[in-house]
Image (cartoon, rainbow, N blue to C red; front, side):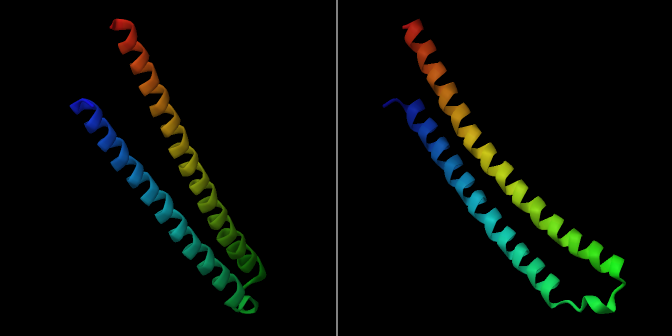
Length: 101
């Protein structure tokens, strides 16, 4: 194994662990947000508010939660696509090196 391969593997492993950390961190924050929204919607005394304001607040809280879920899905999709792109780029580089040799 050459020095370049060892460095490339180390970079990929560090990047992979960082991506994994971000993928686990984001859902934990998202679930805390979902629990907070559920608590707010269920425990608030909506009878004291104007009905239009209460409905708007409920819609906003639900929308914010759905937006967080969509952002997590986009982040996960980006990580999966990045891994595919790296693998294809590495394969292309290996094919180029084989042709030149």
